[in-house]
Image (tube, rainbow, N blue to C red; front, side):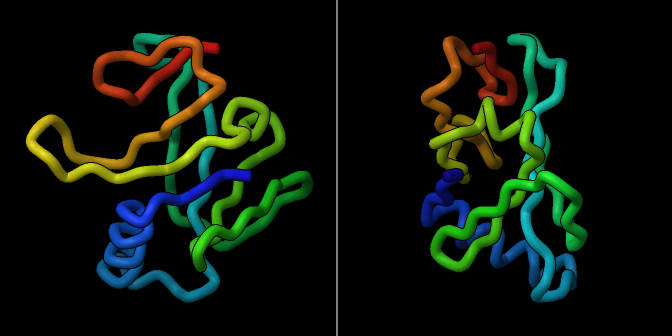
Length: 108
């Protein structure tokens, strides 16, 4: 499961309205090589499922990831922060052994 915190739900809902995406769009999350810790998170709106996609829904927000990325994201929570220390989406990932200072990359 990939969880979505109330702060992220609010921001995703706002972004969907601003971006004028349809109700069938979901958040696609992937993990790629890169960043100062070795692996980076990618988020985007998408409306097409591909074979082996892992589909989750938490509090009305649909999150989709490929199988390889899910191995890194299992039981993670997507959060949003708009505070002075940083603004944007980030993951609380129990699978990460370390994260970078900005929270955009991690290592396992």
